[in-house]
Image 1 (cartoon, rainbow over the protein chains, first blue to last red):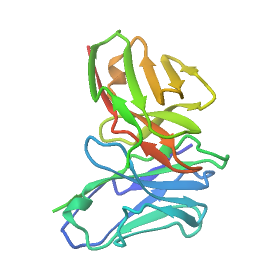
Image 2 (image 1 turned 60 degrees about the vertical axis):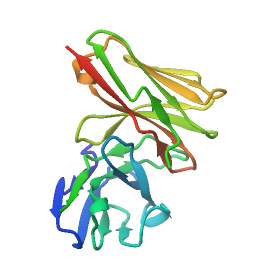
Image 3 (image 1 turned 90 degrees about the horizontal axis):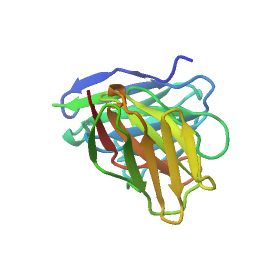
Image 4 (image 1 turned 45 degrees about the horizontal axis):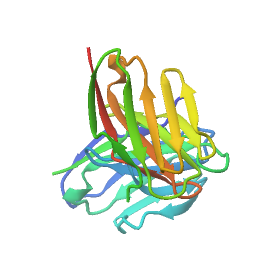
Length: 115
Length: 110
């Protein structure tokens, strides 16, 4: 079990630039989640995939954010025209196929800093 | 939006003492989960308790659930320095989405 892997661990970029993060879930997991977490807060749900289908997207997510999971394996999260408020930790999690909520396995996140 | 609210926000105790954290939520749930997060790392699942369960144990962890009061507690017995972390409860508002509280920051003093 190699766990959930996220790359890069840290990203520093100037305001207005585009950034892309990658998540490799646990191989047998068909559910994949993206969260955003700011200091002192719990994770905030962004979006959810079951296999390659994006089934839910938070209403808080602007159209500058897009996520893909093209073959139902790894996923990417892209933020276009980054803003100061996008600075946060972006977490990816995966879980198994059983119905209902199952324990989620998290990566160590990508910390994004917007200059 | 955050459904779960952990209490206290921060807790500092001596090594060896027990630590109790509470979580309150607002709507009906199917299950409630507790996670731990070390600084700068991802979250680690600790325990899942279903709505028809009242208590669950895992090693030094004990979780209770009171659905009539919409609350849960996490007890860590015989705390260790390695237990220093933030602890979050998460409840489900659908078949797939978890709603998280802001967490309790636990510090174990040696």
